[in-house]
Image 1 (cartoon, rainbow, N blue to C red):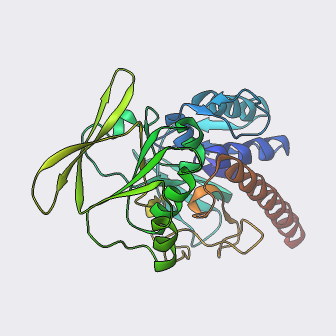
Image 2 (image 1 turned 45 degrees about the horizontal axis):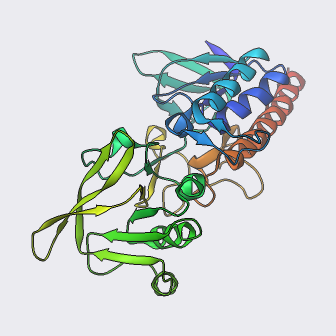
Image 3 (image 1 turned 180 degrees about the vertical axis):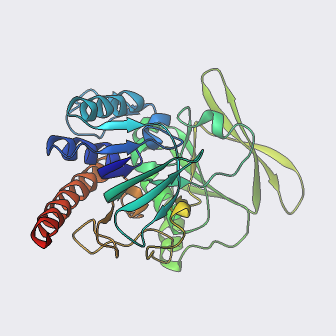
Length: 315
């Protein structure tokens, strides 16, 4: 089937793009992917999305966005895009299971997945004391003990940020030396709330009925195991943008995030747009993703309109 515009991904960026395109009578098709609603569906309360003074649960926020897109005429289809042919127009999308779709324009909003350790207790406690976003969840750990896992700049930055709320922030890293830049290390080491458990390998997240109790680690020097008590554990070991299905057809930065023309959502291929965390490794917030989704929809609408006029004129 052919569509004017297809949106790949249903996080805040994708669903906002769907709302804008649907209101412009473009009847967009949204391919949900393997995690409909994106990362917010794994969070609990969202306190920093404008318009909800008492906060809103992540799954509820995404369900509201989904209903709003459907209300204006967007179509949402379950499935996963495995490949996209961008060599000619219309673009062809290949779906898992053998289906194919074509589109005049494509919006890529597949997000980025937080890297995980793969240890027991980690995944099942996401949103229950284990977090991948300090700016999203730090507020909920006021005057509590927190662990940040990681040794790069992101870990140092998140540890510093979390000291605004926590009584103690413990940095856990599996090596003695940190990967972070010297200035970031100096800032973190100069903060009296930050304590260090270096040369420790995380083994397991321990949790009880009321939430996380701590992180079990192994001392790499002595081989002894110990439980580092904490009320929250923040993973700060990086993110992986979900771009593998594109087969390297679009330029990326050194971290693998899609590159767009500054101030727009336009990629190097006309008619292909990117929004949300798949092209943003700096902010990674629901509200910035939603904003970039609106940009992508407006860019796609203009692209389709100009090309439709050009097609008519050439006949």
